[in-house]
Structures are given as C-alpha cells and as structure tokens.
Image (tube, rainbow over all chains, first blue to last red; front, top):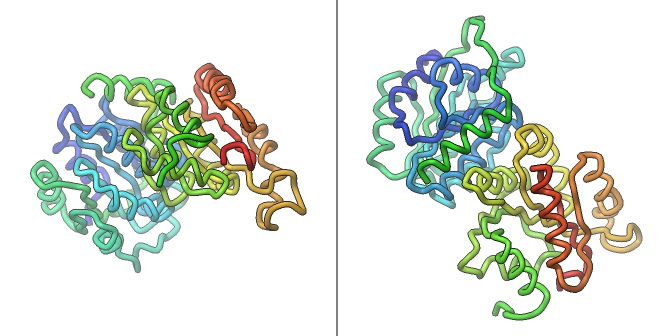
Length: 190
Length: 169
C-alpha cells in the first residue's frame, strides 16, 4: 500500500507539460490541487463517476496528448460500464489511474467493495491494453513510465492507504476558472 | 442500406452543417433512422456509451476543443443524466446538445406502460433543471435546431431537442 499523496506525487513526477489530467470528486482533486496544480488539470468536483467518461472523450478528440484520469475506487465502481467502453474504443493515449483505498473516504471512510473485487481484472477483460494492480511506489513509477512507450488504454489500480486526518484544503479556484484554464490548455497545443 | 434522402438524412445533414459531429449516446427507437445515419456516416464520430451520463461525459469533452458535443438518447435516459447535468454541466457551464426521443408522447394509453410516467414528465424535468429545449415537429428541422443552439450558446448549458414520434421517420 502507498499513501495517496505519495501516489499523486509519483504521478506528478511522470507528467509532461502537454499531458491532460482529469481528477475526480473528493479528496483526489483536493490532493492533486495541493501537490500538482497545473493548467492541464481539470478538477471534477462533483459528478462522481463521470471523470473516466470525460477523459475518454478528450483522449479521442486530442489524440496527440496523453490524458490521465485520476479517480477513486468508489468513482470507478459507480461508472463501471465506462471501463468496457474505454476498452472498446481503445484510445492509445489514455491512462486510467484508480487510487483504490477500498473506501469512500471523503464521506467518512465507509468501506467499498474493492476488498473483494479486482478492478484490474475487470480492466483486462474490458479490453485495456494493460491493466495492473500496483501495491508499491516502485511498480507504480515503472508502470507510469511504461505509458510513454506502450500503447494504451492502460489501467493502473493503485492500492492506497486511508489518509490520516491531514487537512487537505479544498480546491480554491472557481469552477469557471477551472474550466477556462483547462480549456486554454487543451486548445493551446491541439 | 442507409437512405441518402428523407427526414433522417436531412436531420443529420443539418447537424453536420452546424459542426455537430462528435456524438455519443444510447439507442432509442424514436431515433432509429437517425442512428442508422449516424452509425454509417464517416464524418461523424459516434461513441456508443453504456449509460446516458457516460454519454454526456464523453460528448462534453468537445467543449474543451472549441466544439459542441451531442448526445442521442431516449427520454427514459433523462433520469440517468440528472446528476451529470446538475453537478457537472451546470456547475462548470459546459454546453451540449441532447437529442431526445419522446417515448410515451401524449401519455397513456399510447405507447408501452414503462414510458407513461416519463412521457408525461419529460418537459417538466427539463423545466425543473432549467434546461432550454425545443420540440421537433415534422418538417424542416433547421430553424428549430438554430433556436436551440442559440439558447445553448447564450447560457452555455446543455439543451434538449425533444423529438416527438413521427418527427423524423
């Protein structure tokens, strides 16, 4: 298991300026905002479950840029049907990262069902070119590096620890600012 | 064989003239002939979503590339769209065109019982969410589409074209 901020830092270390990143509702957007804020990030504060769909659309429309989706296990489970859709569309530039803490942490750490369900196996049977579970930092960094050379879509299911009660600030930017900054970033190099 | 003329071909040509070529959706029998055109048109990129909210997410990506996405759905799928619309589209003001087949039009006893409730509630749901909409009647779709697109662009929100049975057959 990895701490969520370590996982997000590992992802940050592997990002190029051109990469686009969609982060999902709850702690993941807050953590990403505090450790890797950049113009190519879209913080999806609500609409749990829609991050992978938006990421798929972007990956299809902007094929020359890598699109990262960072979501939690609760979010992935909510739109589980998006996995076979991504597998069927097969955008080579999509990297789908599930930070799996086996819980709905933002709402009080109620357990999710991923203690008993293997999301990486679902990814493999859904047609991802690669789908793997990562239990430690090393594997995560290796797998992230692999997204540069091997075609996607790739699914990385990263087992993360429940965070200690560290106070991560909310995303302080307005939704209009988040939208417009991201849009300029997409349009600048498309 | 896809028909090259007729109402569905004219409708899809009108969509293309307006740049609406990035499409996702979930099939609907009212829109059967539209789907037939869309699925066979090399100028249209269609992503066959598994749920209407997933279709909304996929199609909304077009906004970030300076385009407008389009979702094809049945009115029963409006229920699946509610959270995506209220906590994504309306919060970030991401416009999108929803082309909605109107099952249960006219209320009971027309159509099958599973469409009766949503058939009657369809327009009320759009009004509740404060989404602009136009009802497509048989005939030239262009004026109706342009009214809808003007409202969508003015408010930067999703808007619905409600297609009643017989409007595009």
